[in-house]
Length: 102
Image 1 (cartoon, rainbow, N blue to C red):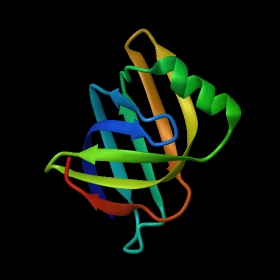
Image 2 (image 1 turned 120 degrees about the vertical axis):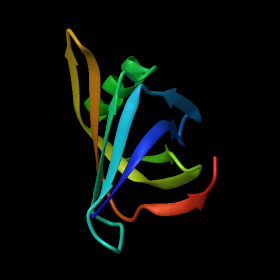
Image 3 (image 1 turned 90 degrees about the vertical axis):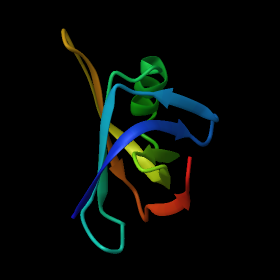
Image 4 (image 1 turned 180 degrees about the vertical axis):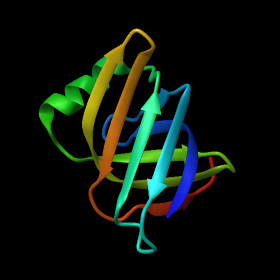
């Protein structure tokens, strides 16, 4: 298992980059096809809520500390709003690929 700290994400279908206050990407196996991500305080809450309602897989680029990026298809599994802010959970849908630096 490997865990990465996220700095931002980019939705490939719309080209929107979403800033976040904190996030993590967890890869559970060497083939990088079992993975999950969590982000907090996203800048585009409405966009993520719409994605959750559509219940579809979308291509997402996850930018990590250490100036690398990983891309893969994911679905939004949860959008939680509370007094402390908004958190969003993603579940990977296939392989997560290393694509370079940000």
